[in-house]
Amino acid sequence: MELDKKVRFVTSGEDLHVDKYIYDNLSELLIHIIRNSLDHGIEKPDERIKLGKTKEGIVRLDITEEGTELVVAISDDGRGLDNDRIKAKAVMKGLISPEQALVMSDEETFNLIFSPGFSTIDEVTDISGRGVGMFAVKTSVENNLKGRVKVESKKSKGTMITLSIPIAS
Figure (cartoon, rainbow, N blue to C red):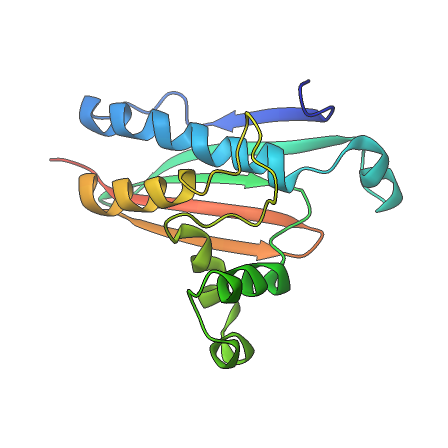
């Protein structure tokens, strides 16, 4: 409501039993990722209509067990990551050179969102924009949970962030 957006939140995997340590670490991380989907990803209803989308955006949280891993996928059907904007901000902050920006793959570009202090938003809101959340997500997943983070995105189609976490045996 605060962002003046209509969003449907869809979940799957609620019936899975997860180790308390994993659960305690995941809950805070999911808040960061979902806030980013709401603030950066999902468009306002009038913008979505102009793009041929429904007024209501969709944010999904899907949790599955795949072999020895817990896979947590958070996706939205929003605007997707803007490679050019990410690269421009990274160059401006001195994270990469202009020459590096020219040859970076999509995956390398998407991973810049996990850099400390990185945000493409010019104005901090109560929802996001401080450049702390996604850095905290990656750091916690890798260091505390010994897992991996993957980002996939398509312009105007949305973004999916997948956390793959080893299940304690």
